Image 1 (cartoon, chains in turn brown, purple):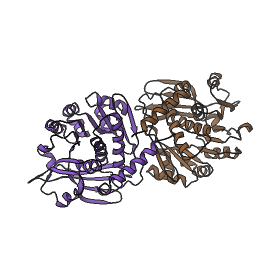
Image 2 (cartoon, one colour):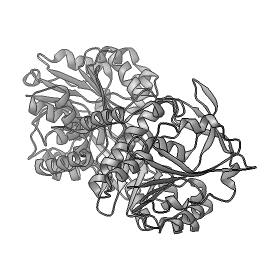
Image 3 (cartoon, chains in turn cyan, purple):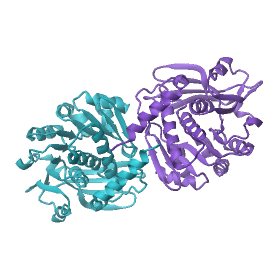
Image 4 (cartoon, one colour):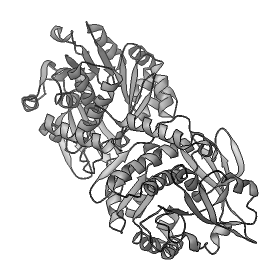
Length: 301
Length: 301
């Protein structure tokens, strides 16, 4: 079934203790698309400025990512982010964020994409997420992400968005901030009261937790000691998860768990390379091989 | 096969945000014994003072814990610990520790226990752990625990102990302190260089990681939102793990993984009650039921 993502398309500058890269392709919708694209075609919606280089567009070639919804806005500039990882990659500092085109009028979902069944609303202003939802004609599964800024400053807008989605993916700190509960199971249950049928709480190197009205499931991260650049891990997780669900066209608890396993594995591939390097070079076979290893790791007699 | 534990037997005073209990039975060897006892008989070695009450001795009744090695030292006082949990149980403060008998000459492994095959050396001075090892006639598997004090102040003694054991169980902070590596897989590999054939790194609410020369395996904690008192969770983990290995009398990688799953589940039962309350009331059936649920949680299509 059709899979749509809305989110940022940006130019990143990333520093780690070992390396720095300037002006590389990044953004939540981009990481999501390359990750989901390993499993299912993706429709990408987002806006860039007229400074968005052709070399970046070329990177989408050979991947099942439909860029019809990539709006190039004349006179605007592309979103930029400059981040730095410290202390063995466990802390991230945003040195600079230039919203640019992301701070302007949001893009519109093209007519041809409005029938999308599976939709991921990557992190942006919750009022914009709600506007995207209104443009959808027949959604089967809408999942959104969010961030601390919206939780703190635009809580009412966020509550409205959460009332209109089927699922939400957020990290542990955000879940705690949103619900004022430290225990993540309790936090997840509080989020469910706001509307979603399931909540996935990302715990970074500690994996992810799925909370539904009936159960809570914890899956560890795939253990890798080759962390080169954690940028985009959360969006890759969401991409692997949604890619699997869209490919399967099922949203039952069992499919959701396998989807989380796919998200876990694709995120672990992504962080083993700088920027999109490792993810772009991965294929379905590499992902399935990692998934098989992850599955075997978690099985016991 | 025979299973022996050496460690503290104490009187605990524990405070949580919800409750306080004074002078209850505690200690590393005690938690280990009740946990392992769900799976296999345990030989307990430790010393107490003549203030150790009969009511505490009565608690062992009905459990397969052989207390022949429980030495009551006349004129000495029992080990005491007073701890307080803060912030949703995520921080622990030791308000008072009275070593008492634990600071005196260590107990000796009784003749009848010196043929023990499976041995867990709970946290104590590494020189004392080495002395226990010398008393063993035919060990098949010796596993030790340790703590920050020995890593910092008695490193040479600890290195000697690590060179004489088959496995080590320690928490994430201790693994990092011991190896000066932040990444836990790398830290685990550094510990292996000191002698052990496997390292289990406990990550509290985030589960445990097994590192061997061939692989690393991460297992999440069993998700429970009913955390009443985390005291003894690490010792229960070790108890479940060693209890399973001794019962099976196998130490291959597959058995070790199942053992970690048992450790995870018995630790999760323990923290759902105050002091030993939940653990003492649990039986093999309850543990196996939890293990089956844990196994199903981690399986996916």
